[in-house]
Length: 343
Image 1 (spheres, rainbow, N blue to C red):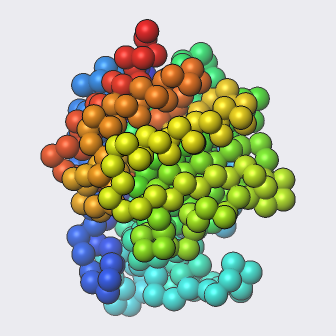
Image 2 (cartoon, rainbow, N blue to C red; image 1 turned 60 degrees about the vertical axis):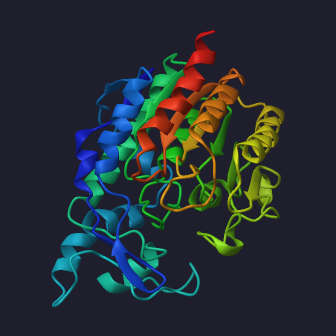
């Protein structure tokens, strides 16, 4: 299986995030890269460095003001007397239509949804090459590759068109899906992360040309809290083209796979010919976020069932945090996919 990763994706090294009023070590660390790389290689992946496709595919999803913010905010932040080592907002607008300030502090609040997406010196470079890896994966599918894996790190599914959040800055899955859609493919995005893919939903919510499906922990008591409810079906041209499948905390293999069947039935009804899987490994029972109780065997079953769709498939890495099982879980899902895809 072809796989994509650029070494510069390791230059984002966040130190902290805020949770429950506490400043905690950030779990989205660059050490994830080597664990995930080894797990993918164990499944038979062959890594390539992505070419530079430029800003165009990124700007097809993200606004130019937001891109400019990501490119420059760390330098501007460091000019503030007494500023912290990372860009973390302390004020937010009540609405996206509120005034757009010139202040670095104000713009941080406008473009960062929460305190779990700190920006430091290497953040833009890492996010840029994470997106380029996703673009290269989409181009591989367009070139005839039936299945590919993208080690997109930092992840992306919490990033809206102009808003970072939840460790995410550029929405890699959305960028890849748009690349495929513009080329004439009919694309569905299947998000299997334990957290709802709120940024992905937001980007495509009023569009009818991309189906977005997310299986995740019920947001009533779990991040991202304000998005991911079953009644969110899309709007305008996108009405009926968004499916949320929230599940209780502690959901195990059996119930998760039952929801996966519902998701795949909707994807089949959409007539998709290409599938972007926002691959969160944090549904595992031993993941630090403790949302679901899916086992390593469950991951193998997920991969196998996705392969059975027969769709061209691009796996784009999302969550999944450092634990003894992280690499094994990636090996399991990719092996489950490849073992059936080869049959």
